[in-house]
Image (cartoon, rainbow, N blue to C red; front, side, top):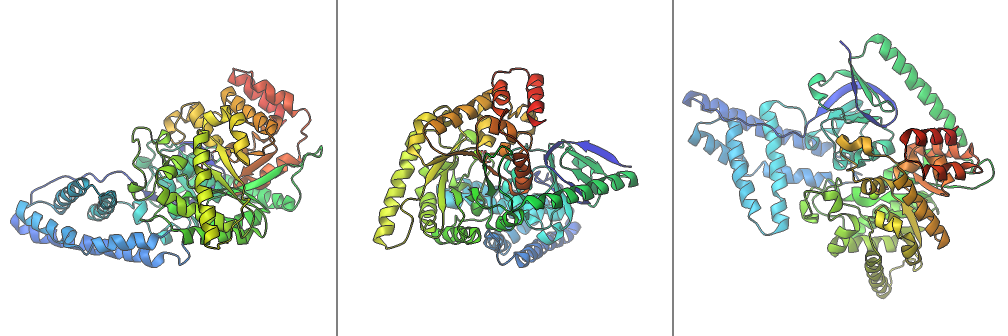
Amino acid sequence: MSLTLHGIGVSKGIAIGKVHIIKHEPVEITEYCLPNYALEEEIARFENAIAMARQQLQHIRDKVPKDATVDIAVFIDAHLLMLEDSLLTRVPIDLMNEHQCNAEWALKMQCDSIVQIFDQMDDPYLSSRKNDIEQVVVRIQRILRGSPDTPESFETSSLVNTIILADDLSPADTALMQHHGVLAFATEYGGTTSHTAILARSLGIPAVVGLHRASPYIKSNDTVIVDGLQGVILVNPDIRSLRYYRMRQYEAKRYRAALTKIKNSPTITRDGMPITLQVNIEFPEDMETVERVGGKEIGLYRTEFLFMNRHSPPDEEEHFEVYSRVIRALKGDSVTIRTVDLGADKQVVDSHYHKSSVTNPALGLRAIRLCLKQPQLFKPQLRAILRASALGQVRMMIPMVCGLHEIIQVRLMLDEIRTELLHQSIKFDPQMPYGVMVEVPAIALCTDLIASHVDFLSLGTNDLIQYVLAIDRGDAAVNYLYDPLHPAVLRLIKMSIDAAKKAEKPISMCGEMASDTRYIRLLMGLGLRSFSVNPEAFLEIKQIINNSSIEGLAPLSNKILNTAYQAEISKILETINA
Ligand code: PEP
Ligand code: MG
């Protein structure tokens, strides 16, 4: 029987395929006693599970693409080594014999005691190794239980042409899955502007999040249809539904093909206002999509994905190499490299990068705060960006700035590095522009005070909205409050645009609001003339701009700033988009 489940559509498009389930939930372990005669068999079961875990990891290891952007191989090797260690392979067997208990319980006892020792260590690097132990143990426990994959254990080859159903996917999981032929994502948790949703949009993969308690109703290999626009998934659809959605898929394909006609045309309104339209990327590989849609400049390069799914941060050479690839692909056009924004939902394997507030990580040690606390993490990136500036048009952008003191600290670091590079006769652009994200309300409110200290600004609405409205952007439970049209949000945007203009500093928007076809005219009406959007939205946004006239947009847009009722706001927006 077919079943329809409703969630939040975060990346439009229709996908039809077989489900691949990924679980993060902890494996529940129960203890049971075994009679003497059953122990041998239980030990054999345990040894088989270890052998299978080894096989799984080896298999994944062999499949890691040579040019993988993240150091997955090192990550897997560390796990393989643990499977050779008697602490995990021999001691649980001794415990089984001693306590006459099942394999799962013996492994749990051993894992608990190892973790306890790690917890007592002062050395943050060593204590972070406990994550690896836990991951390896979870893998063995799942094999013992015959459970579905964890994100860490999936074989990328088995993901081709599947629809991923997960309780949740971190940006790191999504990064690991990228470019492996996944048709769509569906998760039980998550919000519209969570980084996972942004990645899905950027990869052009349909995605639905917030499908609460969907997993009991869906089995691996069920056929599902994902409608990323409506936020609906159909499980085991009937033939009529399949026909209908295949037709919609075909129409969408034709629409996208038609859009490519404007690929090489300029971005300019009907009444002659040129608009700057740039692209957001997360990986150097995204440059292929950028080229496909005719994008020229990169308005936001999120570099944090370079840090994910690996044990040690990238060194200066690796940063430099990756940035050089992007610059080469740009053939003279500019790239805005954003310094690393780790923290909150963007986590790395090793928590020693940042020890921050666990109750409210979005307000904790994130982005520039973390970088300034950990110069050993930040400096290699700054050096690499400066070196890369000798190869093309590079701008540097700082995320999560909340005050001038942070800008000054970064500037001092840059000055120091420039002097170092000069002494080492290493080339860089001494005029490399640097700017800030306007994503903390404090900076939006004080753009007039900040603007003269930077070369450019870019509005990060994903975070700005989260902080203005006090809602976690990744939390599906409060997603209904995530409202880009809230007058408080629009007033801040307007205030920041006006202040930047007055200070004669360029201001753009790289938050997802700019990639949303519903808001682009409104934003032009508020005075914005520069946008950076995800590659999949690029042509659609360009088409809207090219079909719009600036004239008449401002009075309507400004009207929303003074409108409290949502129904009225929707009406005004309808008129703007009519
Ligand atoms: C934003 O906050 O709008 C933004 C572009 O940054 P990120 O989504 O990476 O936090
Ligand atoms: Mg942000």
